[in-house]
Length: 253
Image 1 (cartoon, rainbow, N blue to C red):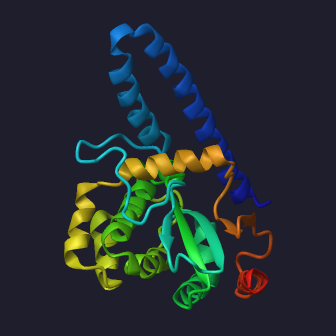
Image 2 (cartoon, rainbow, N blue to C red; image 1 turned 180 degrees about the vertical axis):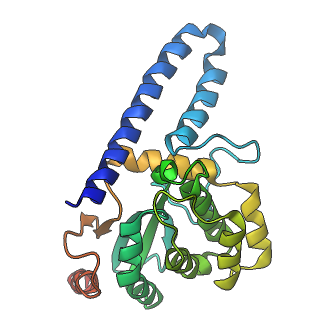
């Protein structure tokens, strides 16, 4: 494992540990809260989920609201429901290794989804907020993608490709909101959907999805599963991933 990959894994472990400390503290506070247990629990859960992704709850956010195509597992489901192969991709829009995976395989994923071979479950995570100089780029990007998924799902993959084609360096301030919006428009996202990015409606959902990924055992990005099995092949060269999906599709027939 490279130094950058180890650093990313450490960031995930640190985030999970911090979330666990917050959970224990929340339990103690709830126990002392008496008649305010129910109200305190709801508020604490929302705050913990958002803070776990490195951000703060927004007054404009709708806690618990999920995009129209979201699964119970925190993914954005794209493609034919009866496709022979389900591919799960866990990514963070600030993660440089995710950018390499997209460069090698993003076009193939789009082709396989369009052909009805793959049902894609895209998990946009936001654990690298800490690597964007306080601008919470991972959360802002995840919210934008989730907004597109909610209202123009056929544009999710073109928008994802554009975000990675113009991916900011890890440790930078990330793309501005205006630049994210411009890339969305260039990807064919309708203007009304782009305007909805400012509402930040899915930031809490992105935080919860990130926590859910931690809890499920995800330890790094990109993580790719084919038919529920982690793909252990070369993620950064075109070919191995497609071959694995093709073999899985043949086995499903």
